[in-house]
Amino acid sequence: MFRTKLFQTSLPDILVTFSIMAATRKPKLIIFDVDYTLWPFWADTHVVSPFRKEKVGTVLDGRNRKVKYYSDSPVILQTLSSEGYELAVASRSDTPDRVRSILKLLDWEKCFSYTQIYPGTLYIGIFTSNLYFDRLKKQSGTNFNDMLFFDDEPRNISDTSELGVHAVLVERGINWKVVNDALDQFAAKR
Ligand SMILES: [Mg+2]
Image (cartoon, rainbow, N blue to C red; front, side):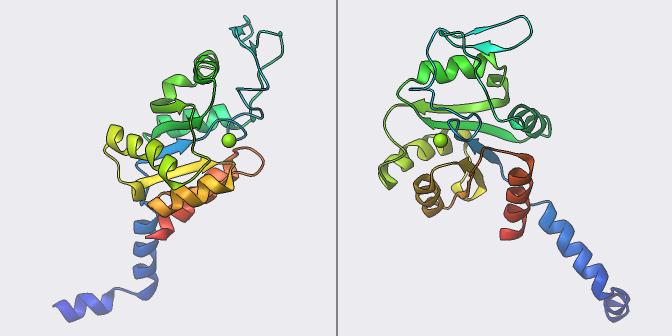
């Protein structure tokens, strides 16, 4: 009986089964840096408070300049969130209040289950990277190897990769290709 079943399963069937298994391997927590990952500026130097939202939905800073973002950012956050992914922000910023205000006014805040935004630094080595990601691990109960992280700073990518996080360098702002490629790589990784 067993032999018969075995021989009835063709190699293509087996490959399809493996590829379905790989495709279902998903990150449990997806973490985004903000400056030059979701938007094209540094919140602590390029924009000023107070921020406000116009009736048409545009967010302006204290000098009446439009607060820009990478065009795919809002849809990426909304789509991943509605597909059931837990999302988080990890940002080193000397002005966490500005980052929080912008996230709130852009209406992105609701997409994030966890936020780690404060001065100090993800940028000076493994110990401080650990701080952000240790907190996210504790808050979410998610292991590092179930996390996917997007950031524009190569140092942060190498530091968090050492923890076991699947970290992806974003070179010209987040976009769908970067996200889809990262999800494919994550699925294929283990
Ligand atoms: Mg950045």
